[in-house]
Image 1 (cartoon, each protein chain N blue to C red):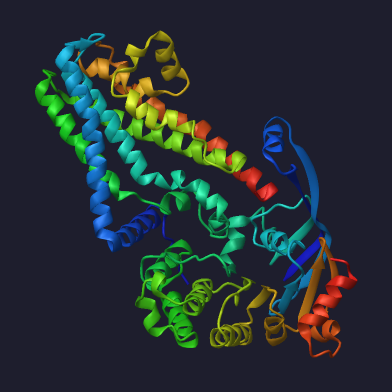
Image 2 (image 1 turned 90 degrees about the vertical axis):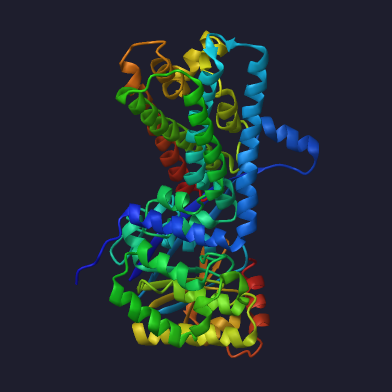
Length: 266
Length: 262
């Protein structure tokens, strides 16, 4: 008898579909949340807009360039939050024992945790990001070519991976504290808020930290320099992809957490 | 076959006295107390057996179930289930077991039951025809019929439990762990679940391990009872070994717990 093995990706899509079906039970709630997400980010955009009414540029970056920068970070963050929301809800999974259910199923734990929640409402924020991105493009005088478009795509991939890694750390820490750690929000929501400006404006120390420790600069500052013709270093095109390596320590921490969980039962 | 030999497990539990001051103190320095959840637990369960695993709260029942289902790694001892070590070959092991946690649902709250079943089909990679025939059989025997198309949140507890039981059997597990499957159910639902479990064992030879505080469940379902208290197996025998013919089952059991000082 031949068994048709459902691969992880197919299974993940099935999880997404059941999440969407669940959500469709509450259409109004979905719409309102999505609109809310849109408005909140729009608010931040207005903040930038009004600030640039007074200042023409911030540390060498113009209004349109900041808008581009912010829209890309926002899109990365929303993408990660949309599909990695399960990590955010992970403290609850630990507390109410749902994680035991995950462990008695013959599938990878991360896949199941990711599948447990798919947050389509983030589409509101993504929409805001996309609108802002094209607005930024029309306002700025960037000359687009293949390598710049590739850079943006790499930024999106690397940035989404980076945020996913931070969410994963957040979840993995639950194995050690049993509770979500609020300070982690500095790295997630904080990064989204501060990430609207190229990290260099926060000083050299911050740039070093975001280059080597939590590599925001790799997906934001350096590739942005290339796109805005402030640097011609072609290495910057690929730099965002390097941020994917950040997932490795995050994953190891998660494995270590699971090991602790299965040996202590809590 | 399930064999457990000399399984030991202890936890470190952070201890502190009541009060804000103590809470602040524990922030800097914690005292740990070692709890011996399981002390040298050994038993063997043959294929097709139905075993009641009983004991007071905190006796070590759930630690045992967690070890058997591969969630928990013991400190010492060996455990083999159908030739596999549960916590070492977790993925392969859990393919062959079904677990029902009476107090925690595995169904998706807002979608029809059948949607959850379809997802389980993919999780376990159940072949189409096996899934079809299992689903048909379970639907008929548990009388699920119309329930399958209702969202879980609209089901009564009894209806939901029938669906939970079905969900854990879709992949034809050889061993079924039931953790308080009849908790909170009305008399009719209780009987339905019990009858079903008995039939499942008779028809498919499924090994059933049942933890419960409901002695009527035990009486109706299991010939063999393992009694655990303070992390040790105190008694491994038949239902009549425990009741000794006394019709007041709960009183007898309470008496027994007291006599073991557990």
